[in-house]
Length: 234
Image (tube, rainbow, N blue to C red; front, side, top):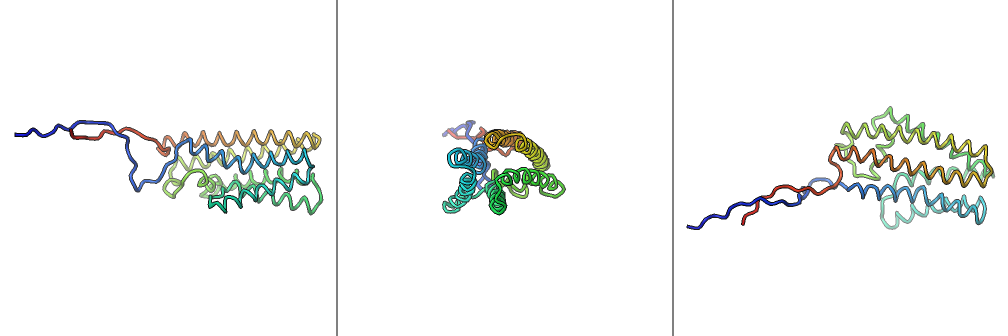
């Protein structure tokens, strides 16, 4: 009589259920945030400063605006999603440029970020009174969100804390920019503002990623491969 094969226990990488939502890895989230920050903040600042040194203030203002709308148009033509950060930056830059041209004042161009940073910070703080703080409205640009995920208590606390963080940093940027504008020459102001604002934005981005990663790991939201026992027959 034949002896039936003995089951053996092996380890195999678990496969996600077909109906489970895709959960990106931490590296994928970092890449997405870094790319969004690069396109919406870093490159326009570099374009502005280079054009300012080579051609003057008005060409620099126009070049930064052209870059922002060029980036939006390119993403639309290639059917890529345009981040809310890029759209917000383009809207603020458009308002700054239009008012500066109407008033024929470059000083007004540099004053407006102080007002807009303060206004955005206040908007972030006011959004804490709503069911969806401002960070919750932008989170979908960097991580796939649904109603069930957004309603989790840890996620809601994260959104509120990050909203407070970005509001405080917005007020800090407005205060620092006002001091630089009043105390420095135009050339020194442009250079100092470019470096300091870039440093603050990069710090804010990585602080956001770090806090979000801690919560994501507790909630099991980061994509990973884990070993599970599988019964295999000889």
